[in-house]
Amino acid sequence: MERASAHAIVAALQKVTLEKIVVQSTYGAQPGAHCADLGVLYELEQAVQALATPCCIVRAAYYMSNWLPLVATAHTTGLLPSLVPAHQRVPMVAPQDAGQLGAHLLAAPVTETGLYAIEGPSPYSPADVAACLSATHNQPVTVETIPKPEWENYYLANGFSHMAATSYATMTAIFTHQTYERPQHPHKGATDLATYFAQALRTNTYRRSGAHISRPLNTPVAALRPWPCPLRPASDQARMVWPTPMPEPFPSPAWRQWPAAAGGQGNNPVPPSSPCC
Image (cartoon, rainbow, N blue to C red; front, side):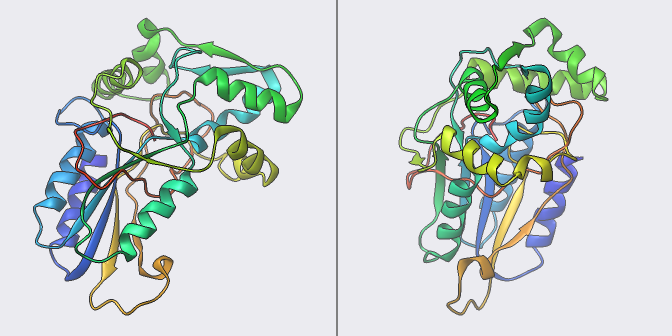
């Protein structure tokens, strides 16, 4: 379904004249038919780069907001489910920081193109997330790690076909084992994990996201700047195209959550990186 959505986005881009395109991708995007969104997003990157329109590819780390659908579970049970080992640190980013980079690139001169990446000020672990939730709720929260032999069954239990469950288990392995090339010079978002959760939980963001399943990857998105493009706020210039979301590595069987804004990286092209989202 997501591959079909990405193909539809590219088909639409081929029929319009634009000044610039900014494509949201993810750490870990890489060629492969059975690695879930990593392969889909890599294909989207390649297809958009083949167009005549100047473009930026922005790869974002795992969105901090993807933990929000699990807040209610953690608050009720004291447990935070995770497919990532409790103390393994991985790149994460606040969606507003990723979106700010995407907006900057969209409003920047058309000569500013290439591959970009963005992550937070430091990597974080599921245990760090649990500590943030413990502090905000004033109660202990511990990580409940789902072992690797149970990954595929987890996806099957959440409605995946056998083929999809295998693909997503493969993607989860790439993410958790970090078998991808990390960007050498990523942009660093200013928002740390504790600040993000303090702000998000204070504004009840997690309640608004409670109708969706969380996704650690970033859904294919094309941000388009129309041609001609008079000078005006970048938020006015961005046209976001979202395909249908699907559940992914970090478990939250009771909810679905749309991913947040676009993500990004440094000014030099970097090799494929990781699922995040």
